[in-house]
Length: 350
Image (cartoon, rainbow, N blue to C red; front, side, top):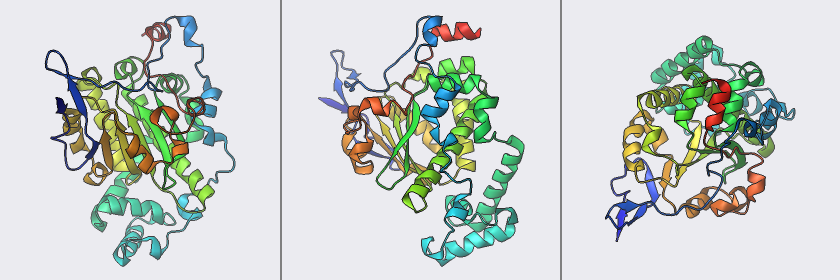
């Protein structure tokens, strides 16, 4: 007898693979066996081991952020490289709406593609899109995001640590040409000990900006505009220990900034290996997301291969996920560890 944990799932997110849990001897649902892969815990046990295989600044740039040094990616903005045409808009109303916004917010002239994202995020409502866009422009002035080519110079220690011990990387493209952002559950309790909330936000905003750069690079390669990313998030290590008031506060702050200032950037999200607690977690988190964003999320249990293959070509899916991309090649571009070793805290004096 199996217990289906997805029966109460929100209609906003389709649980494409029902999460079925075998009943254990005590009658409680038992977590299914997951295939080993890049999300496994890798940690160092001694201070000496911290530097064994851990990347320095240049290593991080080369592995996780190669586009920072790729001179083939033009500095020009997407709207300059690929001017928005009337034919690309859903209808005449959207085309007119974009230009109406630009008239009200003149500093966005020449950035019609960027403006259209805000219009779509507000369901075509020009007035609401103007307010959202103006709020973002104020935020960028006040928050002053660090330029991509400077962040690892100005904030080297924290990003180096977080990127070495966080499952993250952008590699490959889905069937629509969108860059794929691979991620996993980070050791949030460990992160709280080595990073401030402001540093965490700075890191996340940098990742967003870098993903925008990845879209530009993909666009240049394809010869057409690609303005969204595909997210693949492995939830296997998600437990209640990932949640407390401070962690939830950080998460809400970061997700709120993404929703407010990077609208319509997520094209598709596939959540893998959702554990038994996830339906409840999703019920708490989904309300912080724009309804348009929620509809782009597919949540899977352990049987996720068919979903991945529908969205992503076989040669872009790592072999341990059922694709043909060798694990060794995948790990050249994606950070694999997901737990901060205790010895790291001692070395930092925290």
